[in-house]
Every structure is written in structure tokens, then in C-alpha cells.
Length: 243
Image 1: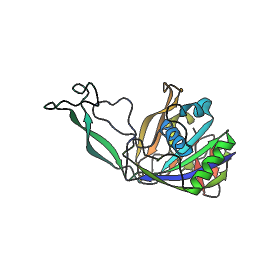
Image 2: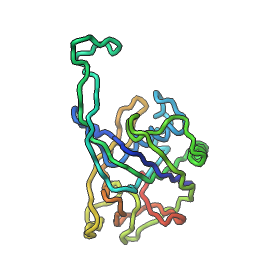
Image 3: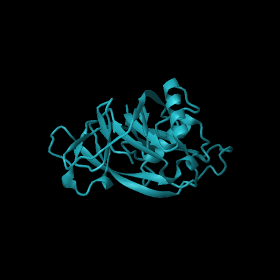
Image 4: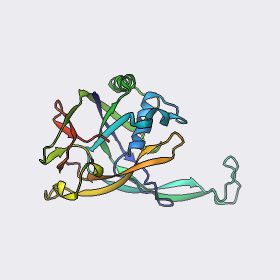
């Protein structure tokens, strides 16, 4: 099976942590559901029903950090929905707007790996990336955070087994793919790890049906882990875990 690889970056990004409300926080990486939206924008899927193309785990992805995780806070002007009952009519003399501080990723850059059992759509994605043309604008989480991208290539998927050895991974690590924390090498002094809980799969009506814990190395370095099954991309000398 083929794997399409591309780099994705921007000045800012915001992938909202689902359980935050009045002070929106951001995940350090795009969730799989966010990547569905990005791929859907590239391929021209209708935003009202694009999730129909991503049901039954037809698509698998992996993602790695190219820049260290850096965050900043920016105040956003939002409509005060307690006052503005009809958005087209803002009454004079009333405070129709409210400022909310959003947490943003600063200078985020990712390497994205994508594969699909739908070969024709995967090839369409590769052609779109190669031509550097998309059906809709690509953003990092929200429309204010426009993104750029670069096609790295289309490669053969080589499935490997670690044979109980530590493997250097270039992607984030889904924690369901290991049995215990002892299978992660945390002794390296130049690494900083965090655990992130992120959405994984949604129904067509956007009902969340699966989420996952991930290990992320926030300095943009590799992760050493004992993992039974991973994918090696020989041409890039990179190893990843698809989810």
C-alpha cells in the first residue's frame, strides 16, 4: 500500500481541546479528525458531509512535529450571544461583542503521513499536493490560521516488527500500541514528553465515537519505543505508527 507524505505549516494554529469552553486551549498536534477536515478541504469534499468519506477507518494517518511546540495567547473578538439574539441585528448601546483569550500554536510545522484503502482518492490527494493546488483553503484548525504545505512524496508502506528492540519513531505514539510505559525510553535528557488525549473517529453527524491517548515529544525530536508493529519509509529513513 502507498503512503502519501507532506509537510504542513503556518504562522499560527488552533486545534481546540474539546473539553475547554470559555478559555479555548489547543492540542499540540492536529487530531485525526482535524486531519480529515484538512484532507477534505484539499480534495474538495463538502464541509456538510465530508465525514462520510472517512468512515470505517478507510484512511489511516501518522503525524510528526518538525518544530518544537510553542504557544501564545491572543484575544479574539466574538459575538456576545447573550445580547445578540439575531446576528444580523446588533442594537446600539449594548455590548454586542466579548473578548476571549485563545491559546494558539506559534509557528507550528508538521509532517503528515496518509494512507487509504481507497486507492483512487489517495492518488487524487497525491496529485493535488504535487500540483500545490487545493479545492478549498487549508487552515490549521480554524479559518484564521491559514496553512501552507509541501509535497514530500508517495512511498511504499513497509510494515515492520521491532522484535523487542527500541525503535526510533518520527511520529507521535498512540499509547494503545504499547503494553506499558516501560516500553518507552524516557532516559534521554534532550526529550520532553507529554500525554495528549485527542479525538480519533466521528460519525457523519459529527458524533465522537473514538478517542485516543498519544505520547508527543514536544521538542520535535524522535521517540524511542518498543512497538510490535510500525511502518518504515526507507527513502526518508523514517519510522512511524499509523492510527
